[in-house]
Image 1 (cartoon, rainbow, N blue to C red):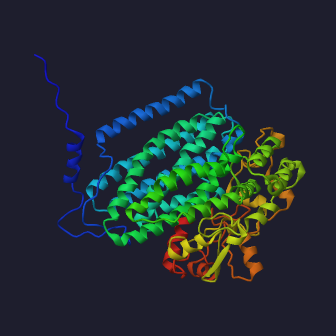
Image 2 (cartoon, rainbow, N blue to C red):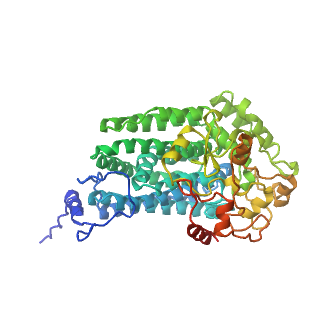
Image 3 (tube, one colour):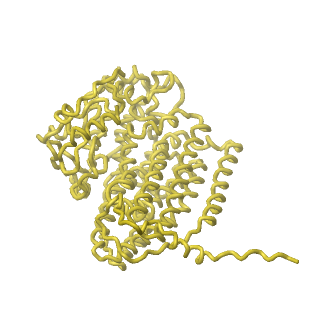
Length: 573
């Protein structure tokens, strides 16, 4: 007699049991660990995907098998080094930043689970939390795969150590820090509604397409698997909005948070990914410029297909903020940022390849007048890329960048947009009125030692490199180079850098000095508790630190207490 197969409980019935698994105790009134300024509705929310853990885990296991099987097959087929070294060097900070971003998104889900007392939504956030953990592991695995199999592993081994020390990484981690600081629902707006709904189109689709064009199959394999989960996260973000909109007083808060989180994300993501798409590639068959990609993915796919339709729910986001972002790209945001990054090549842990005639032709075709405005820097760089020239090209970059923005940590590239204000006898510069508005309306969010150049103001270049630790195992050759050639005779060393005689000058200090505004120096060697020659520096007492530096200010412009200073110094000492 045949045995009947057990009946499987329906997904709807299984998911309905989630509501019965209450997470909040009823025998006392608990207070949220992460308070929010939003009004939390008393009615229930809806989990849009109704994910059941058994089905979810089987699905993710299948996806992981395909990803790692593909990477293993690629190694056997000899594919790791088919992409040009220019591309693989340029994506080193990108892979590091994305791994940190996924970890930040994971942290955001824990904030949401605490802030929103709805069991069905908590189930959705819990599943997304597992997604973010998976994504963090995937990016770390990709990082390890590149380190193990590429012809130039040096630099890959330094990426995570460089996280808080690198000029380019600090900008990336500034945006991913938005995922887990401040109001938990504001953090969720940035994570789910802005980054995952809008910017993953360029991060996980447009850039991997450039990678594939350059012969790198590993990044598209990994990023497409990650992007397949983002549809679920987009739905979670929409469910969060619907839940909050049950209280009308949340509407103006949502409008402000979506606008602000979009702007600060634009400053970092549009700039960074735009530079990678156009300046890291050796393949010039690409027909779309970064401006055209922005129009396709951000203006059409994100704003017109998603953001503008939020008005049906009562959330009205002006198109002006998107047009402002687009105009900054038209005005050369990415080109100026590329020059800024390339001019600081000694302080990077990856190589940067100078442009050639083929690149010039492509840029001039896509951006008429590009060579007249930006060509001089690239001509100088490619003719001074070897150490026997004894020249570090950077003057034009300083001229274009201006000060560093306090809020987004990018250069203040657009002179007509530059703003500033004085907080606690220290001048904060901003790249735009929007960044100034964001800082003013989020007290306590943007604090601490935020300006990379100020750490090393007045230092000689080789001492900065030594302090950062961006030196190859021989103890003298720099990790960063203004070319990607591997000939040992063409590599810059600490002695070569020192022979140039250049010293770091903070643009923020120069700008404040020029305008007669207050500015206070930072304690040198903050990163490693060492000064430029490698000897230990003296950590100031709490009272001396408060007296001589404006570091680690609280959001209202006052200094931290001596006790807070002692804790901070102990943590970094």
